Image (cartoon, rainbow over all chains, first blue to last red; front, side):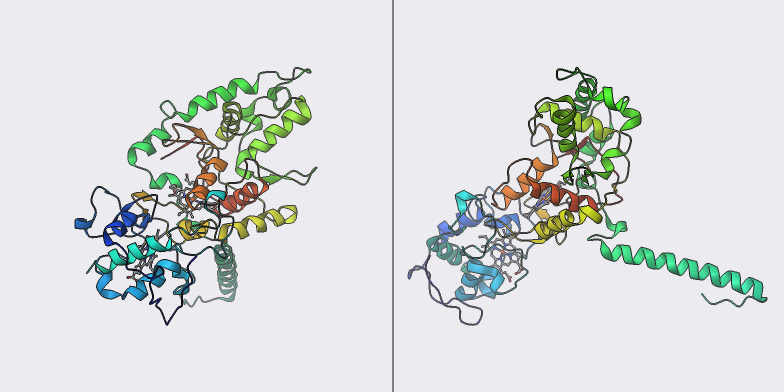
Length: 127
Length: 272
């Protein structure tokens, strides 16, 4: 696990030290077994591709790139409970303090540091 | 409403009536506060189905769960074990002796102090009274007998005991219900209390009630127990699935039944 520093509501530095790949980020967001973000969020129809279903228990990700800095997006991806302790949004880069994690996933974050950066790069493009 | 009624006889009568109404409405209010979801907001999982599936559940001839119920009826009077005893040898006609029974499960077995669901009670009869091996969890035999017993509670309101020797089980179930688990770090309550009625992808989240089970799920193309459904929720949040029969599931099932207290039983239900 890469270490990171929280400043206010941001993690300013890239977890990998490099910029992410927005194209890969998009497929992580759409993919049901990777980000599974559309379980809860919606996207503008132009972004949807082959994935026809979107959940509606979280705010739309449309325009999130103009509402938030890369640092703000990164912290929300890493661990949304840092912003709202009661949130339903999973922590995508956290392995501590979880209960009864299935063996296959134990000790692993939902997304790797590279994948977090890819998703952040993609979300920044959603203007 | 303030009304002056002349004559003290009548006045006293009115006071007494108002007082009684006040007391009973307080009782309603306090039990509503005890509940996770107020009685008038309880929604069975069937309310979240398409009209077609709801009609399928209601039609006893078309409901595929009835195949298991019929099989259960045969098993009920099939002798097992060296003493040649069937369920009917002890319990006679299930239509009389099992009426409404499943609506009070899970319940504590007074003798052993264990919390039993209907499946566990059936297996207890098998090992203690028939002296044969218990049925395997999710076997057609166990699902069929459970569905058969539960069918005599159809439309009976769930009514479980949570105090006395049930209290520890109940509290353990409640704790699990509100605890986040799995890599996705979600609790049962975050989906079924905070977000019911909303969509995960295209699937509408219900209040997560146990009244349909054992239920025929389209996704399974088969009958399955409540535990099977709970395992699906656990696996969805990437939590470790407990083995069938685990105490945790029964504790959860007791908490779920209490949350659904007053909701009519539907087994054999149809679910997506």
